[in-house]
Image (cartoon, rainbow, N blue to C red):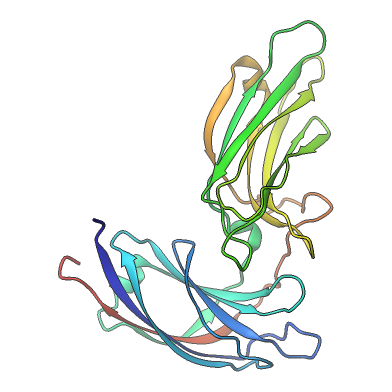
Length: 272
């Protein structure tokens, strides 16, 4: 049986939050995540830039948890909720304060393209055959993807780009562990491939608004042509200099900093 510990949190209030609605206000609420898993949600405070929540939680966490994050969001009745900012505390930071953390903490901006997690199972090979070379890309499945929907899941699909052509898999609804098992084929140009790559991106499909980025991985074509490549590969964020990909890309939040008040107390097992 896995060992757990208790973490007592009080989400008290926020101040001077940015206005996300056309009315000049916001409808803020908080999500508490432990290692990217949502463990609690506060109520929404409507039409306020200085919300008071005053909510307390006692969280049962695995002893080996790595990070607690508090995300502040603006609730929208249509489309995606807007991310206002986050507080992220590592296990080491929490342990270093025996009396707990009590005070105002600054919210950090959230870049959705950096909020990635999970792995994708890919098989790549160039079959030996007459005629033009072709690369066969089998998208098998993915696991532990970041939740992008309020349901705590996503609607993932994969987008593969190679040699100027882009193909997509089907969308798998309401899961963080999609299985596609689709083969996409790309014709390769003759001659040396140089630094050309095959890019695999995973996105969360949305019927309203923009699709959300879930992660990416790249494979040098020169290496794939020499030997088949297969296995599980960790999803990575977009490079900071990369442009948004595709006609429907994830949002970029403004680079601001605001404050939110967050209190935390703890009760640790003797083994800690």
